[in-house]
Amino acid sequence: MSDFSVVSLTQALIQKQSVTPDDAGCQELMADMLKPLGFNIESHFFTDTLNMWARKGNSQPVFCFAGHTDVVPTGPVEEWHQPPFSGNLLDGYIHGRGAADMKGSLAAMLIATERFINAYPDHKGSIAFLITSDEEGPFINGTTKVVDLLEARNEKIDMCLVGEPSSSHTLGDVVKNGRRGSLTGFVTVKGIQGHVAYPHLAKNPIHLVSPALDELANTQWDKGNDFFPATSFQISNINGGTGAGNVIPGSVEVQFNFRYSTEVTADELTARTVAILDHHGLDYDIRWVYNGLPFLTDHGPLLDATVSAIKEIQHIDTSVETTGGTSDGRFIAQTGAQVVELGPINATIHKVNECVNARDLEILADIYEAILIKCLT
Image (tube, rainbow, N blue to C red; front, side, top):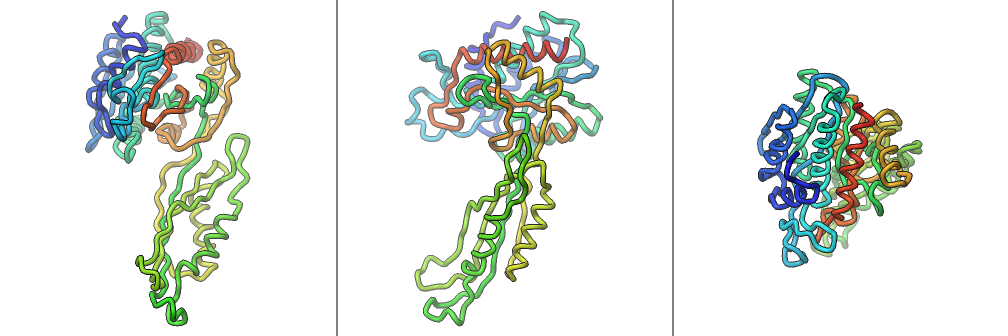
């Protein structure tokens, strides 16, 4: 057994200042714990991002813990009650950037795995860890690259538990069995610049695009399903004008985003958007950024084991949801793997004074271990 507890391991990870994409030695610490347990460790560095693929065993099913060592910047350090990379334990809470998102989950995964292997040395299948330092950043050199590598050598993950902080009020009250897709559009509508006193000599692109934006905002793209709400269209930025109050702008730039369900595809959304813009006779250019495909894991071995483990240990009925933003689970799910997200309470993530309940992390390790037992024994 290692010398770490869940709490002390979380503290040790927080003390490594791993702001995206710097891993700052977190994966080395994790590898040092996994090697004595029989894991083969692979480190893969892509451009600016360190990734780790660790696996014990050669048979199916492959149960994978996935997560990230990188954290978002601290924000104003003077506003923190405790130093942001201290990992200080105060009044039952571990304080520091990454405490809840997601170094506490990583520590719980490691301790759970250590306990499970010691108790079940002849477990079936394989256990793996897919860890990146590029989840909070542009997410182009992290999990997605490792998944490509695994796919190229036909190494399949069957079940993947992602340690994102899914809980809302009580540990385990929410697990995520999918995420909506994210599609961003950037449209530039062209007009003719002119003086506001002579509108007949100009074409105001803001006026021209407004009816189209109203139609886009009021279109029903789908009705959702049992797991997903209806697709949402939201305008996030509008930029136009010279800054002068007497000039009609020559163009306007609009940024919008779809958070979409599995009831519609990105191609369908782009085609319907273009049809609406064309219907309004606009002179425009459009560019798309595909942030992530939707994914869904229905009831099956992993989701059922997760719900059951939470019930046994926390004595609560968990809510299975697909709410929230994107996660690296979207890259793993595209390979056909079952993917579930379970982690601590998310109330302080990305905030000044991020913290996590130390007792919750100990319970989380128990839940992770129970899931391993249900899936691999």
